Length: 316
Image (cartoon, rainbow, N blue to C red; front, side, top):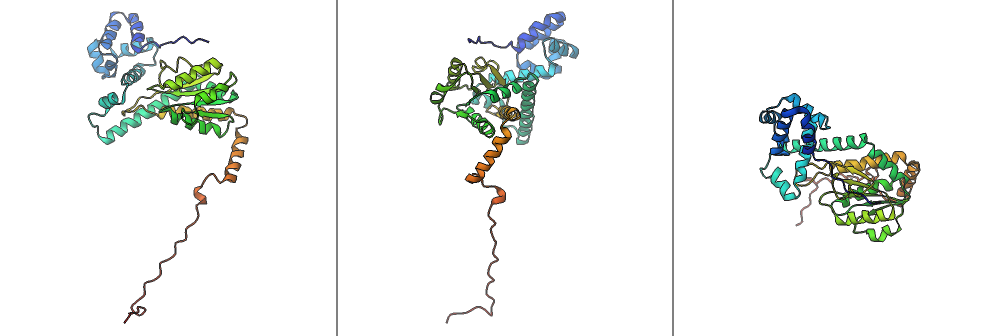
């Protein structure tokens, strides 16, 4: 099946399409936004209203007409757009850290951003049903391939380790230990794959997805942008927010997606309880883990008393 690439409508285009319904005030407000888009949307709302000679009611009504909950969601989308414009670590450092923010202020911003990333990502994937569907696909597959190279290597191994605890036939393809060329030759339409790819996107992961598509293997893609190279190739894209206060993109929402995906898959897997029990027994037989409660007790012997004056012998 040929997949036609689709680039989502931009935030500004959505606002421009909605503006005519509000006459000249709506068009004037959108022209003001367009002059410094997307940063104008991150400015103080009162300043934007003064520049556009608009009312707070118009701001919310325009956002709703453009398909958003309210203007707060428009601002959130604008922040994501700005983040995506910062394509390199150097650009992100200059925009976020060059002025040496105070540690506490920076940590507060990190907490706020990471909390928002996780909440908005999981809520979106739960509301549209894609997370539950991905879990069902994983359980239904005969074999499961987890693909992730470069920075996505860690995500792939984390999901692979979780799935292997309750599902059989899970193989992690990281381009190092297990290479796609050595494994995907056996892939069929009865299997399923999960591919991680976040900017800057690995050519190897995209090539592996092309190979899986030719084999008819359905692919779940976990990525950071609906317009990423991966999102346009897979049957089911799961988009995670990566906005950050650092020079590197945030991994938090992606980790939360793979955690939620493994959890939902465990709920659907009929043999999960049996496999978990069998693994625990095997782990015990092989003495795989060193539990904290199993640590050998170390007897602390009291030091021998120093000889007193009456015990001391002096060589003559």
